[in-house]
Image (cartoon, rainbow, N blue to C red; front, top):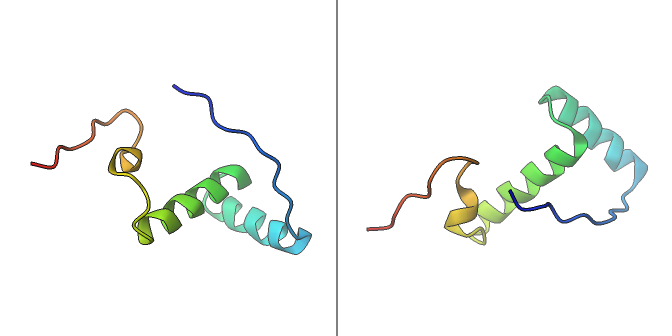
Length: 64
């Protein structure tokens, strides 16, 4: 599995608190929640490549 890209993210403390609460409600870490939200936004915008949409361990479907 390729290593994940690490970077520093600065955000408003109130926004972080809201994300932390939301992540807890969905049994995710804040990091996983942010990644989930970004992936969903990319899907809605049509910017996520098909290969990247498949869950880990599942083969990508061919576009025949």
